[in-house]
Image 1: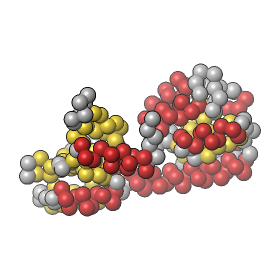
Image 2: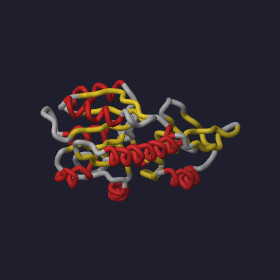
Image 3: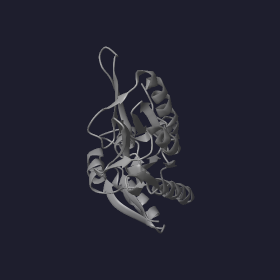
Image 4: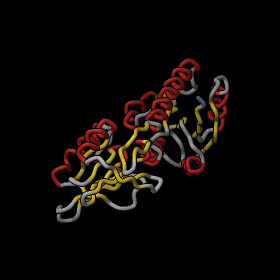
Length: 245
């Protein structure tokens, strides 16, 4: 399984050194090189990047700031930090990197880090391709679980809403679907909604704290969040590694 890599370092000698070390490994493809955060973001927008080798100390931006952006916008993109100082490691683990590598990169440590990244990529791919059969009007529909935006009960009908714009009318009750999809990270955020925890982008509260809503990845509309579910959702996000400040 090939792993697509982006190198980010504002020192050309370090870029060349890391590239030379990576050339010793098979199933590795360097998609781009960037010497600034702006260049890195431009490449991330245009290409599917699995792994970023990210220098922490750069002139235009701290590597941790870019890591935070990558974690937020490209959650499946992994990060390996490159640094000349071990003191950064304690702070850096907040950004859930695959590894920290000290410059100049030790080839044995690099192999360990790449192996870990490849294993993680395999796990992500498996998760993306989890498919199950859903009981709908007229039979069954095979749906990729990761394509589901949310599940909604509207009147007497229950709909499974997917990212590709498709909407399936399920013949199962919302309670039964909650039992099924609870195993895939879905949560009953409201009496009429099931949402995938990992797709929650924000929790919004009106100024009087009378109503709560959720914003999900790839969903334009805001979905209701029951007031008594607010703390529980926050706890679930904390368990997933989300930080609140």
